Length: 80
Length: 253
Image 1 (cartoon, rainbow over the protein chains, first blue to last red):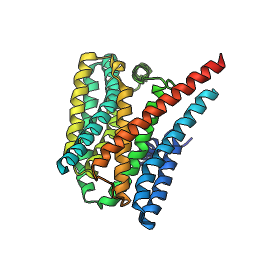
Image 2: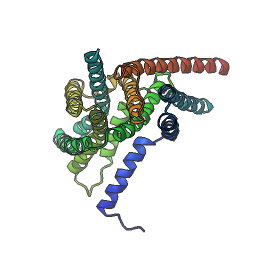
Image 3: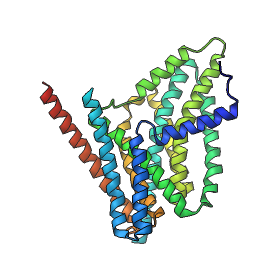
């Protein structure tokens, strides 16, 4: 049987679990999508210096990510 | 023009913080009401008060410290967090509006809290269980409010205003809670959640873009444009999902 963890360990675990649930939770696809969006838009804006394309890409990719996640949920529920 | 941009920014900020705080507080209040009705109000109020004091201390300590963080980096991190969090809320609200998810959590939360109190072990004093349940409910739901207040408040350089909007939500929800007691499932939670999702995603896009050195056309006014765009997209998603679900039901018959 494992010894019970000390309170600092439990505090750190609880803190990590909170952020995991907060950012990833049951929608890991949204977490990954936002990281990808930030990566792509930073390349366009900071490296390519194309302000207009970056300004269009950021909201457009966000809408696409949301739509894909909603569609994934719909497919999951319609399969049941 | 500048005044209009500043005031629209402030209105969106106050609206986002107020609604997000209200939604989270309705959930916290459901737990407190369940504890109060089952175990008595003293422990419920004590747990709530200690949780609120802890959350207030967090805002007071972390908020001003973040102001000294480089603004571009802060806005990029805040933008990404708000985009993720806002899209999670919007997704859930869209699924609920189109009938793919149950509309209210409050009845289930109430029942779950009452059941966990009924299952309290004899070795633990019942008042302590009630205190811990009320504290955890308010603290965990409140922590999300604190993150929204701190991230939006510091990025918009209006931390005090964001904290005041959250406090106003606390008072409003508290008063409603006293009036409606166990009828919290009647609060239009999904509509509020959808609005908050739209506001958080709008802020996430705006701040994330600023963190990536994007110069938005029309500056702060673009925030209002984002709210309109995301609200329209949300409406379209709900309409499309309803149509898909209806078609599927016809095929299944």
